[in-house]
Amino acid sequence: MRILGAMLCLSLVAGCSGSPEEPDAGPSAPAGPGVVDCGHDIGGRPPGAGSRLILDAVVLPTARLQVSDSGDGRLFAKAGLLVRAGTAVELTVDPAAADTTIGWGSPGPEGTTIRVPACPDAVGWLAFAGGYHVPRPMCVPLIVRVNGREQRAEVRVGADCES
Image 1 (cartoon, rainbow, N blue to C red):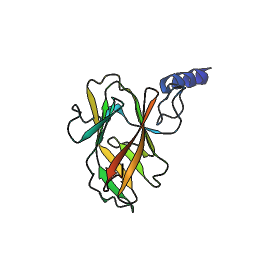
Image 2: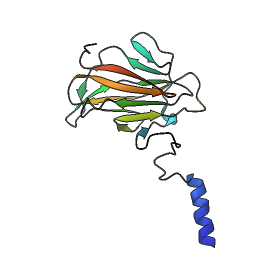
Image 3: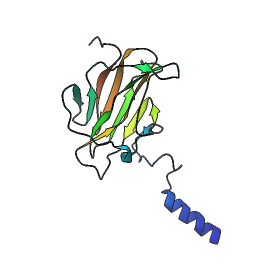
């Protein structure tokens, strides 16, 4: 009985949501994407020149990003991610951009889909360090999802976009 009680207690502490590395995303959230830790916010300011506001919640750079060798055979472009506080967002690299990943946090997840939760204690704008890993300079196509809405965007990672 003591062991059963201890197991129940551990389950309650863990939130009964699976592994401690992957927070419970809720029934409507997609499985598998990396989640940025709200505690990795480096302090955001309202969007300014050289940026584009997507779905009134995510700010992406409009300038061509400079790339450097990442040491793993790919290139890296450093670019922070700015997200409106209290808004959950998801960014996905379009599958057409093979071998491209995104990632933000200190350190944070890297993958083809990254989620930022609503960060309940935050106010204003959140900023996360990170950027884009690409096989070559390219226009990175992204799909941004916020509150059931979706918008496509492009980020100039060492190259210009045609559109």
